[in-house]
Image (cartoon, rainbow, N blue to C red; front, side, top):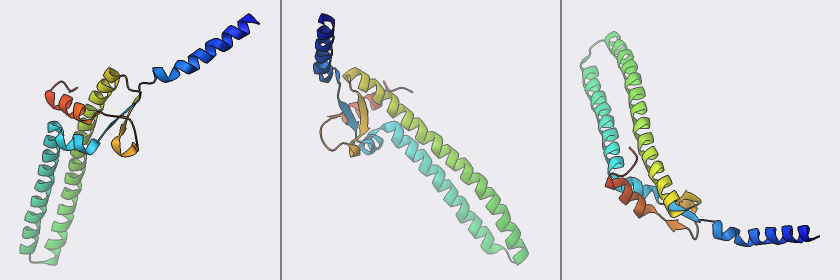
Length: 151
């Protein structure tokens, strides 16, 4: 009987102490981080530059197309340009995905470091937090921009 009472009391003590072990939830405003993180801003400029290059390429090809005289020339030209565009778009999409993933990975690595330092259980997007939690957005931005971010 003593063993049962000790077991019940031990379980009761554990359940009472559980909330003290909880570290809480942190949250970040990802959009604010993205807008204020220098590496992310550089990545976005690079993506926009590549996008502008593709638009200039299309404009130049349109000008060339307008100079062609016969329907056969135009049809052959269109086929060539479509093939080139398909290649350019695939390369652009690959480039954009890699840059966006690199930004995300850096943000994730630093947010995980902050989560562990602050003893938080999880970090959520600020849009999913209705009430409570700890905002680590500014700490994250400062850490990312300080150069101590995972590279």
